[in-house]
Structure formats: C-alpha cells, structure tokens
Length: 284
Image (cartoon, rainbow, N blue to C red; front, side, top):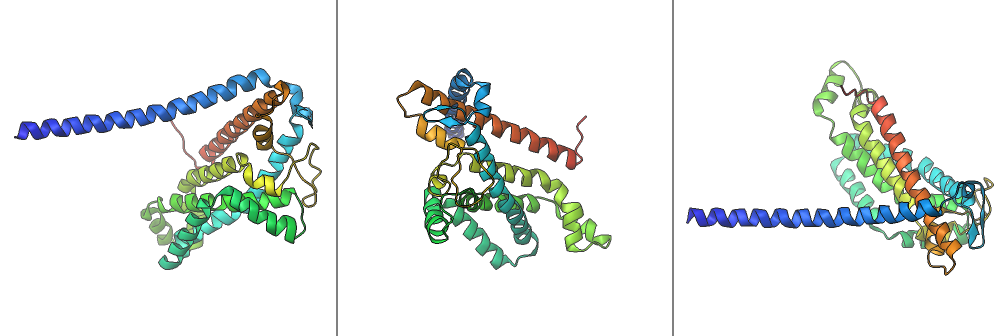
C-alpha cells in the first residue's frame, strides 16, 4: 500500500517536473529563435551609415527613428520615474492600508489596459481636444501612463523587501521616517527600483500602437518642438516596413529591430553597473 503511494507520488513528481522542463524549453527556444533571427538578419542588414541617415521612402537610414525614440522615452521617463518612485514610497511607507489597497488596484487596472486603448484616448484628448496634433509630448505622456504602474509596483515591492530591523536601527538612532528612507532603506531597494525603471523603459521602447495615435511618424530628425510636430521611432519602422515587398524596406526593419535589442542591452548593463556601485556591494 505504502509502496504504491510512493510510486504514484514519484510518478506525479516526475510528470510535474517533465511539464516544467518542457515549458521552460519552449520559452527558451522561442527566445533564442527570436534573438537569432533578429541579430542574424539585423547584423547582415545593418550599416553604420544608417545611424546618420534619415529614412527616405522605403530605404535610407534610422537616424530620425533613433533620435525620436530617445526623445519619446526620455519624456516618458522624466514624468514616470519620479511619480512612480514617490508613489511606491508613499504606498509602502506612509499610506493607510485601505488607501494602499485602492492604489494597488488602480495600478493593476492601469497596467492591464491595452496599449492601443491608451493611444486612442491620448489621440482624442491631446491630439484633437488639446490641439497638440501628432507630437513628441503627446506620445511621451501616453508612454508615461503605461510605464507608471510598473515603476510604482516594483518600487513598493523593493521597499517592502527591506527588513524591518534596518528601519528600527535607523529609528533607534533618532532618524525620522523620511531620513530612514532616504539614507538607509533605499540602498538595499535600489536594485529593485532600477529594475522597475529598466522594465518600464523597455516597455516604452517596444511600443507601437499608442504612438501611432499620438506621435504619428516623421522622416525628419526631431527639432525639440514638443507639440505640433510628429516624430519618428524605431518600432514604426519594424511594424511598417517588415511587410513591404521591397528588400530595402525589410532590411531597414531588421536593422531597426537589431538597434532596439542593442539599446535595451546597453541600458540594462549601465543600470546594473550603477546599482552595483551605489549599493556598496562588493563581491570577492
């Protein structure tokens, strides 16, 4: 009887681990296939002169798209990062439990709204009603709404993972709650906060649908004018040119996807290096 139960448990365990490994293999295979396709075709299609040549019809370069992408994500990060970090600190350290629950619920709802719905809302509000037209500011604010929930929740989660003993030690030497957060608590939470910002920036870099309604598209380099002027971005090139029947257009799309992957990898390395230095962690 006991032997039969053990066999069933072992069989169930092996079956569960088998499905787990199979699922992991499918995910890894899909990721590797995507990266190999993007990097392989992107490297063969990419040329350095694309970095200082604007898009011309179905060919040309990516200078306008790269600069426009940086402008849109920079605007979104300037708004979303402070609001998300301060919101996460408030929910984690100061808010009443009911207020914190309401804020968490709202951020979950906001993060679940389809991006194209946010883009259409931005189109009706900023492009039409406020008269901004297709512009960098309209696109940046739309990305802000998308990025904000991720930064807020990861900031809150990172702060909650800091042990209570560190807060108590800060209070014991006479620090106020604000001083404890700004001088003690933030250091072990910095990695998680930076990861949240990185994830939000990656989401902003990879969005297309909301920008179609708010940023439009331009084959010219950004001029710094925030309203009344459309702006180019890399995901538009990928989304539009990949289905074109012209080899030059598909090459430009693969090059844009390759540049996006390189940018995200670079941002990840920079952020992790900064977090490692500021957190005071040293590995022997």
